[in-house]
Length: 287
Image (cartoon, rainbow, N blue to C red; front, top):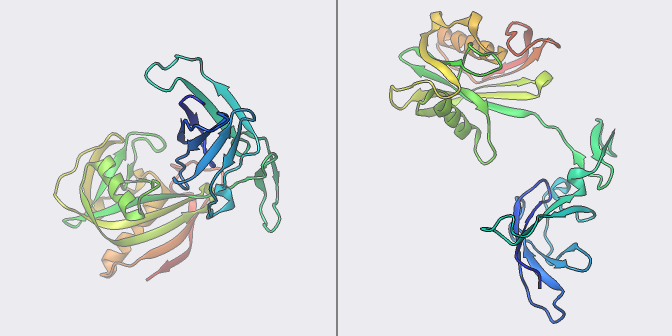
């Protein structure tokens, strides 16, 4: 019978697993209960003689990129007693999809060059990131934060940041506003989606209102301030996306109607994130 031990490994990266001893007539097998990010109900058997993981259930996977591969593993065991409060031994398991060398070519049925694992043939896709934030209206003013981190240290921005796994875009915008401005807000409506292909980002900005008139700098901000529309520091804004968003907002306010805006910000290649004027706005749609 195998001792209790902990394994790190999963189909698409690493996740915590624990061996559970299981008695058999030969004493050579034990079952492993695996909790993965894709399906927490999988069970596998482990053969102590071959060190091979064998699936004991069948599962329908949503995508081949999340399908577990059990072709090759690199294993190492920690010294016994290295963690007196934990399992008696631990094993690090790394699938070939995470550790194999890659080649760069166009896969069958696709049009772009991809990084492909030469061992398991898994494709490492690169996808754009989503930035979410809030344009907060209060007493005919908008709330801006001065950045205390790079890039664009010391420049003004709407509270915004990367969306996290497990949250909606609106939830992420509310969270980022709390983190950067310590402000509780209520999302009113989406205001803009701005794609920036050069850097692989999409900005989704929501109109929001303060639940209470309280705000203060969070860990990533040195100041937070409400600005009247004619006082917005356009020469000291952090990113082109902030310039575009605030200009569209001012145009809508002057026209007496707030719209939803979609557009593509084409940054000039080689410019820094803080070069806020090196762009063109294309495919601008509004409704």
